[in-house]
Length: 633
Image (cartoon, rainbow, N blue to C red):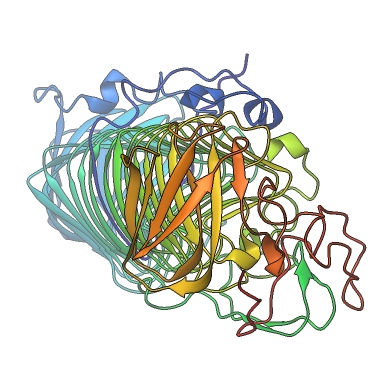
């Protein structure tokens, strides 16, 4: 079985993190499952290993973390321009370059305008002990590793590396970092390293870049930390200001490489693109309808987008992102967490403001535990499939709160039709939103809980404060919604309302009222004895509510109080609904939403639209004309 050790991330805009023992105790070896195996809707995902490709068993060697050395055999180097002195063989200084040519340990102190160059055989290891050293270069790396098996940089005292001008390269090597290594390089120790690179990257490795300790203050025109094969951080304190990504690893040649692994540390990172207050895109819609990101007649769209090379994502992965602990404060112009495969979160705390998605995975999102607070987003949490097993999730979104999307979904393309990040064709069972536990609060201007196929709720406490317009619903699903446990109260507008389906084993009520309830209206459900079952205050206007709890039985009688008005409800089955989507009345046992019973159940498509089979009425993913309202039940 091939081991895969994958977390790939680029951090952008503004990220402050405090990580505690990330991935140590909770990580386990990959089951090497395929995407289709890990996202089967018939299987409840309960562990990270069911969808993660990460193996953390051999991230660091003992020497990566060892900061001691034999002083008796170490070579002492005192930097002082042409007066630079070397205590023994293995290093030589000439024309501003200190060249290390033999395996060993080198203790370096003093100041130099020039470069330290490591050039040994590819079987030899070198340890550079920086002891209050300052190295400045105008046009090339302050430390350049041209060849070695591995280089260890141990920090003692306060050290500074800087490249002040643009890079000038005279050979085939494109040096573009204040530290540039063609070999594996590890930074450790208890000292401080200040790195400034005006026009390039701060620290670059074309193999593995590891950090196991120390304090780092980085100011880079491009990336802060960049490792082609990987960036692995066991510990350290990081303050990073970068024009591009704060921490980045990308390998287009080897699918097993190009990942970032963070085990512990504290991070304060600010990178290019500004804050989430600067919109990452501008979308305009007028006229017509859309389905799956396609113009269905009269649909117009205008966008303003940034190049993918100018990433403004906070944590970005080419493959998986696995976060097993820590505290994160993120303010990002683009997605705050973005993986091209899976996102797994456990025992971590997030406060997130995003100009696009709060959390996005092209395949699976798994939330095991912890705290996630998304204060601003386009879509809160998005993936081909999403599983929430526990934790506290609170999110605000200008579009969907949760979105399980397949095919050409608009939000999966960051509002840009034709740039789909999900598979063009996916099996129906791959697309689902599953909530098995946790405390969840959604405040969404679009759909609250949205799945392009199925929605499963088997546990947890869920409050959805959905759209204040008729173009979206508190619940929105494609084929079926099933509830077997947990408590949910979902508020929205009746013209697009959907209830849970008839496969549910727990009672659920959809109730639409004839007038709009004001914001801050209290809603309470009581049983026939007057006992309160559930209640909350909606911070937004609404005229439709979905309520499901284990206390709702098939033949029960209930009183729904909305503000000062009481509504009597008598169940004749597990699913009750007094109104349908798009203004239809429907029968009381309908699922709510798109029912053949509603008027216009076989409406003609707009000119130019495809024939889209559904349960009746407009296709559920139709994009309404902004400002146009639908009749209220």
